[in-house]
Amino acid sequence: MRKILFSCILRYTLGVITARQLAEKYRKFFEERGHKWIPSSPLVPEGDSSTLFISAGMHPLVPYLLGETHPLGKRLVDVQECLRTDDINEVGDTFHHTWFEMLGNWSLGDYFKKESIGQSFEFLTKHLNIDSNKLSVTCFAGDSDAPKDEESAKVWESLGIPKERIYFNPKKDNWWELAGETSPCGPDTEIFFDTEKEECGKDCRPGCSCGKYCEIWNNVFMEYIKKANGGYEPLKQKNVDTGMGVERTLAVLNGFDDDYLTDVWQPIIGKIEEISGKKYEDENVKPMRIIADHLRAAVFVIVDGVVPSNKTQGYVLRRLIRRSIRQGKLLGIKGKFIQEVAKAVLDNRGNYAIDYPELEKNEKLIFSTLADEEEKFLVTIEWGLKEFKKLKEQGQIITGMHGWNLYQSFGFPPELTKEEAEKEGMKIKEDFDSQFKIGQKAHQKLSKMAAAKLFKGGLGEQTEETVKYHTATHLLQAALRVVLGEGVRQIGSAITAEKMRFDFTYPKPLMPEQLAKIEGLVNEKIKEKLAVKMEVMPFKKAVSEGALTVLGKTYPEEVKVYSIDNPLTSSGQAFSKEVCGGPHIKNTGELGEFKIIKEESCGAGKRRIYAVLKK
Image (cartoon, rainbow, N blue to C red; front, side, top):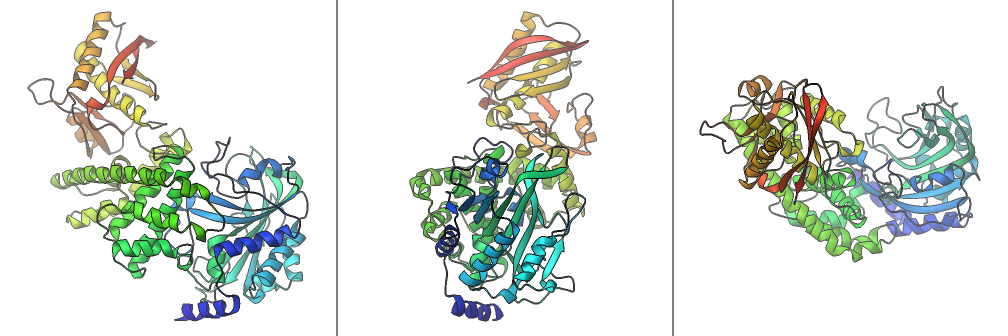
């Protein structure tokens, strides 16, 4: 009732305002003050491998912040579409979003703190009619790198913000810089709106997550450059970089304490209600927010030329889509549904701050990409449930490592593993969550690319082709042991999308006829289309059952064991059985023709084979 009353008061004072109207007011205000309008840059940054997506308005402007002359001058204004991957796990509350629009105005070596803060205050109080008594601000508290920002505080005081509503915070709260070794950076001052909720405690203040204070604007004063050694030095020019999130500001202006109640989101939420047959209330609120957010973000990522995959931007897209599907299942949605939600996203394009004509032009691409990925994920869930039932048959207590292996192999989120365990009456170890995180961190250390931290098992760049080559190394080791003897053991490997390298123990060069036999045996097993199976078991049990390991490698207490069935002899022994992190294909028939291209020494008692897979 209180939220409704608050909403009515604001609507009476301000009237209903849309995202488009907010953006137009913002643009007009700053253009009247000498700022030139610049278009939104694409989500995927051009010529910048330091980040997967544009996550802030400053990304496309870094050269100009560093001193390069902008063709439109020193004052700029824009609406930039952004996507922040570090907020994915936060989505589900009232204000976090993966894809969002950021209103921004810029001074490239022109005005600084006094004029910037004055403009922000004027726009909020005179043009958006926000009561200044509801505004609080935060400033940088200072440290060994930069002094306390007394200058900003004094400007706020001169505008009527009393000292008791001016707070000072450390670098983690009131300092802005891009990730990476070097970046233009500096202190910021953030503006918060008091929603009139009760304080959550004596320490409640702007920045608290309880919802009393809503951040609506951030003015960054870029006067430093972060150096590769971790230090900071003054920039040649002092810049201003501001950001106002459209969704949050719109919620405040329309009297909502939930961003998802605005026109930006309601048509999408309404479609999810229709599909699920449930209302946006109680336990349905969080999954509906996640579905709406993730599928909206997915649509914009697809439009920018990204396809679902297991690396870089494609991995983020896949994660967004699959997380949406998972939340749909929690809502009880049966069958496929994400295309319907995506259509609501497209139909709602008139409610965004700026036009995105590429949405309409790429409708077919959006729907086909989503349909294909939804189909793939439904298959992986099926595979995962089969593997899960094996654990039940084995009487396993579900550990965090089980959860991690199911997640990386089949896309099972840990909450799904726990849910299935409870449904099947299986015990879950108390340290499930902490052990899951340990597996996750161990996997991340093995990845060569920060954006491709996908699988535990040594594949730095995981693609469909590298997965095939990974499975081929198992066939090769088994064939080597058949032809050369069981003294052969793997000591290393390297895989790219074009070829594989396999290092093993053997005392002398291989003869041509031996290489021909090895190659022939691998191709025989490919033609037989053998199943590739995975089990999770204690490491000691795996070794006792004959699973091979890589010499010199340390393994955890519980491991994944991959077996390639169809016994070589009538003994019942699998052709290949190895302790391995994966990933792997499901059937050897997917590999194509195996061809050894080179064999050489790689040290005393060690040999090396290079091979390719031909389609």
